[in-house]
Length: 287
Image 1: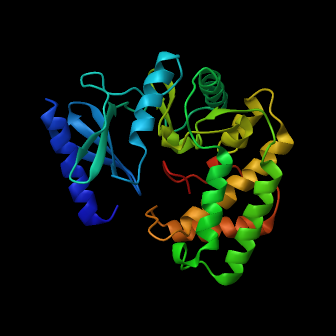
Image 2 (image 1 turned 90 degrees about the vertical axis):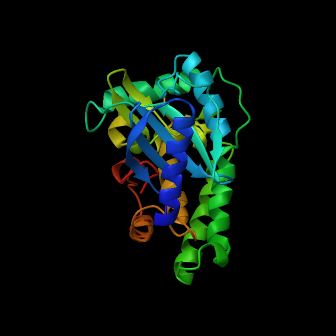
C-alpha cells in the first residue's frame, strides 16, 4: 500500500480491534502489498486489511470457519470476537490468531502433508468459488488491454498473451477438479507450534490439485502422492505466466514488482524446466 493508505489502514485496524475490546499498544506490519497484514499487540491478533471492493474477505472468513471445522491446517479466526468482516474508513478488516513463527521455512515433507490434508478437507466443503480457468482469463485480460498494463512492452505483450492463451487451452478440462487454495506458495504457509498452517483463502478456486502444487517448491511435489506430473509441469508454466501478468498490472503494489515481472518474462522465454513459484517467492503474494 502507498504510505497515505497504509497509515489509514493501520488506523482502521487499531480502531476496529479497540472497538471490540482488544487492546492495541503496538502495530507491526507483517506484509504490505495490495493487502496488508498487521500484528497487533498486546492483544496477540493478526489483522488483515484491504480496500473495500478489492477483497473477498467474507468468502475467506466463511471458508476459514468451515475448513477449521473439517480439521484442515488453516490459520484460525480470532476466537474472542465474532467472526465477521468489519468495514471502517473504506477498509475491510478481519481479525485472526497471531502465530509466532517457529522456523524460517517448513520442511518439504511437512509442507506436502499439510497441503494433502488441506485438499482432503476441501473435498468435503461445498463453496461457490471461481474456476481456476477464470483466473487465467483475468490474467489474459490484464495483458490484452494496454490500459491495464501500460508499461508492458508490445513484444512482451504479444509473447505473454500468446503463452497464456496456449496454456489456457492445454489445461482446461484436465485433471479431476476440486476446491483449491489457489496460491499455497511458501509465503502463505506459516510454521507454528500447531504445525504448518495455510493463510490467505481469498484466492480459493476450483481446479486440479496440480494447479495448487505448482505453487510449491519441487521437493514438495516429490512428496505429494498421486500427481499427474505432465499436468503439474504445464501448471508450473501457467502459474509463472499468470503472476508475470499481475506484476505488470497497473496499480500492482507488490514490492519491487516490476523487477519480478521482468524476471518472470525471462524465465518464460528461457523455457523448461520450469521453476516452481515457491522457489521464487519473496512474500505472501508471490514474486
